[in-house]
Length: 124
Image (cartoon, rainbow, N blue to C red; front, side, top):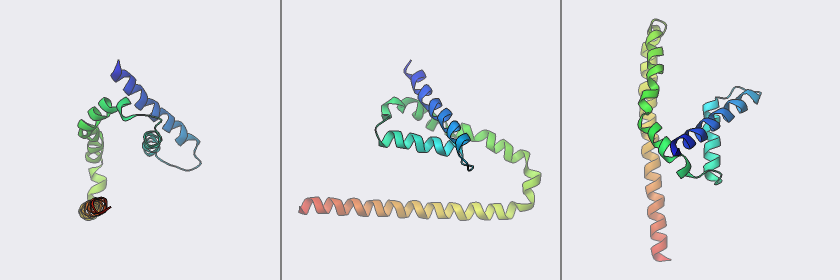
């Protein structure tokens, strides 16, 4: 019964985000609206992590499965994309390196701030 409750919460958020998307005067993806709603509910304690932990762990563990339809779609349109294959590969390479650099920078900054905080607490 707990899993059904958790699925209900997640689907309700998806449904509300679809409604919000339809009401907005600009195009904005419902999936992003749903993530923002979920984040806001978690931050402002409207929803506890325990309410969705098991189902979200399941979805994260099986995330690769949800990319299969997108991969199949890319293969179906390969004849359209093949004229731009070099540009697409360069963009993928560049953004991958950029993502790695941003992640490394974020980790370094976080570690630096954590060490500074630790040092301040020991001296204080």
